View: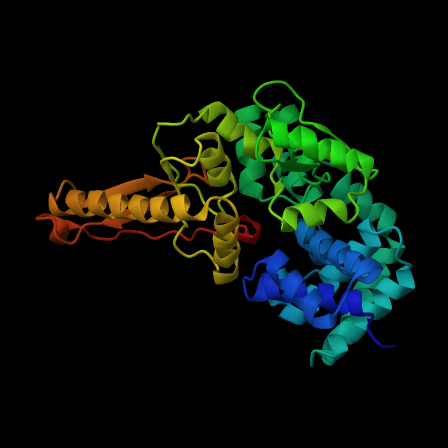
Length: 384
């Protein structure tokens, strides 16, 4: 049985994400364009790819429960096929069981892992038979941080941290919300532009309303969409009239409240959505942007394209100026030999881990020595 194009693409995206540490959305977009997928096929492929990545934690727990093997012992294509098949069996109601199983087996065969086709077939058929028991064991129990991490497919360290900082009830609610579809929110240039665009979109049958929720979520430039956006919204995004931006992201600038004449040094990670919002509110004056080191080249290109659409000259100049100031300050501090070791708290792990920077020019650098090392296991989705 030939593999359907949407499943083939979803399988490819899973492998790119977990085997090559690629960006899920980048891999999907490139694959969809290469295969010429559009309409229903593209939507199905995206649902399968993104859903399988999102539910990887739950699927992995199910695989280990059903097979009695640790995930690290499975060949990568076998793991990818099982993750895709289990996502369809446990979370995708529209897929017949036999199709999910048969297609996963075919995917393993065409990736030179045919020796494991019987294993994949057995695991997925058992999952289909024991779906009720699996659902009860893995999805309906979030009584502890460990169980909640599996049920909501979240990193265990995150569940533990939220349990400790927010309490069990709030942690469960927040973990569950992570798997809910995000609202579609956009930002116009300003409040006046928002009113014009909303009137235009409503005339084309698009359900759109001003951002609500009280300060700081009710951003003057923001709007929220419900239902299908049709062709109008993508077209306006391509023209630079609308910028995809969540209310939470836009609220950061609302709290910052930048004004013309002020200086803002923006060292946030790309792609520059909030930087553009800051620059617009400041009438394009003194808004400094910095593209983070290590940004994938395709993402950096999108970042620069956005800047070109929205006040390119001011922001490009400001970006260079910000980098120069940062480098000068760093060089000055290192030359002054203030410290041999600099401990930088990790934002992601909220104080649980630190990045260590050494100053080899410090007079006491020779006294630095390493003691017991400890591995840090990051959840791959942090880097998508």
